[in-house]
Image (cartoon, rainbow, N blue to C red):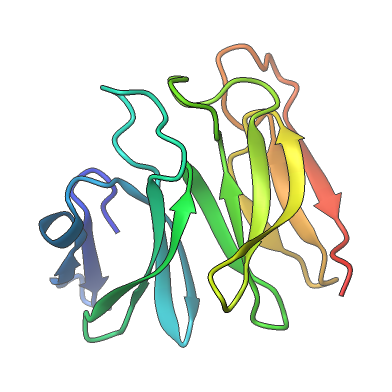
Amino acid sequence: MNPNLGDFVRVSLNGDIERIVDLSAQYGHNVPTALTYQGDFYVANLTAFFATGVQPGSSNLFKISPSGRTKVVGSGLSTVLGIAFDARHRLYVLQASTTTGSFLADPGEGSIVRMEPSGAMTPILSGLDYPASITFGPDGDLYVTNNGFSLVSNGNGMILRIRIAD
């Protein structure tokens, strides 16, 4: 995945590169930044916030088949930097910021939501400072970086462990 161009590519073991889909051609310059796999590929985007600042709700979740068919399967997200499936195949989304007009994020604006099959978002955690990524550990807990990016974090980065109630 090339976030700047919106290309989703396949790289063979011998180094050949084949474009599977050009997301920018289909959806505009949306800056895809998060990728995970669950039978199909799932990609979420940051959006081009440099000119306008964060526009809450302007990020989407895309499903991409291995052959390149795309479909928007979630909308209303903001500045997505990470996505991850849990063992029950539920998708969690890390949003860096949800405040209108900020450049990328300010302290306390990060959040994690779970995308429900209906498309609804269930809040999991809010108030994160400059979160950068999420993943599920072998223990089934969700891990998120806090203070993962910022000019003012000054080495205060940490990994938070979040136990998800079933």
